[in-house]
Image (cartoon, rainbow, N blue to C red; front, side):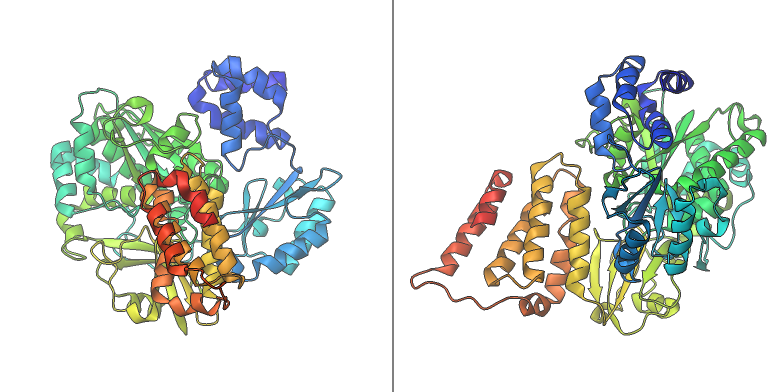
Length: 593
């Protein structure tokens, strides 16, 4: 172990910013991070052992205690539950003689849940030692159990067990015409860097991660910073359940994504870029490294790109199972080898990002589109869409539909059209933008896919009328409670209180006062949380309560109060507590009242 850790430290130039990469290597070899490795690593990286332990405890894919030599994680996303996840997990537990959350007595195998694997269109899905296992069924579980019990190395398992499909059902403007490597760069150099930024501005491209900030403005602000050292980061940490488009783009369009990053680097003057790849996409890691190597050989990365005197290269950082790292400042913290706790803003990354330097952070789809615009021009893109939402949006569609997969639509397309194309029938509603987004009912199908109406990072989860809506909301609320980073009280405590209060109602133990208290908790968590996770954690409850109040009412029990009890006065007290400026300190009191 000592020689191995020394080798890792040397290979990573003793840089603490490479801590996640080092921990991944140790975890892969020993199936946990031994205390002796931590003790040895701390002085080598010139950081404290408590800092290393804090990082290990923050990320769900790192462990301080041993896991099985075969570590199985089954996705707990609602899309997996829709296709029988729970029964299959129980079956797997029986076959392997190991309880969920436990390591088998012989240390061979461990079994647990994970929030989402990014395989929402081909579940139930799981991971074995980090590698994706789609389309789980009884036959595959029998096969996997036999391979584990025979201690067959994973690299010798049948390849079909790991086959992940793209399922591109409806390609559009971007997906139908992928670029040849180098096209965008050559067009940019022919046109000029400033003129290319003007084309990006004319295109009206806005960030495709959900917030929709104008891409050209972000690049312009970063370019104009006085610092000479700048960075480009591609956010490929799509941890939102129901979202998997970035996985497909990186599998089939990675050349164009990397080209978009390089276009950005040339315009803003960056020499180093990072692709932050979610840990669940480990199976893409080596393929992406090979594509980067090919681009270097073609002169599209590295020194003097296409004889332009521009120098830029890209490194890949693998995440470790933390949904919060999809938030750009948390992602930057993780890239620096730290816990992924969101930063206070301002300052924003364009002025103080990675290592305190100006940094552009865009997601996979944004860089894909930017490369196409650099080659074909802004007008080509801007002629499609609406006045405020130019171009197309790539969607991940899953759930109760005949044709789950990837769809690309012009902005302004109606929800009704999208649902018709994917074969959604007997509709109850659609969760747009993942759990942090908005639930819409069948009464809202004329609404449009657009920033001015239904903005989304790209996820549609469809539910038919045979589904239990409150169980769906329960799943989403548990997800947020599990994924809270714990930094701020309103989110750390509030998401747990939301989970418990909702469960009380769903299980039939609530009264009318409990619904009011639930609404008050939603307001507290939304208004006082530090970052977007807490600020959106109550969305599943609020959007469904507004549209289906009768479902919540149907779970309430009739309660007779003692003579003289003033329910209205008690509820008013709860409201007053919720409205106090120091509301975070009174969350527990609200729960008690």
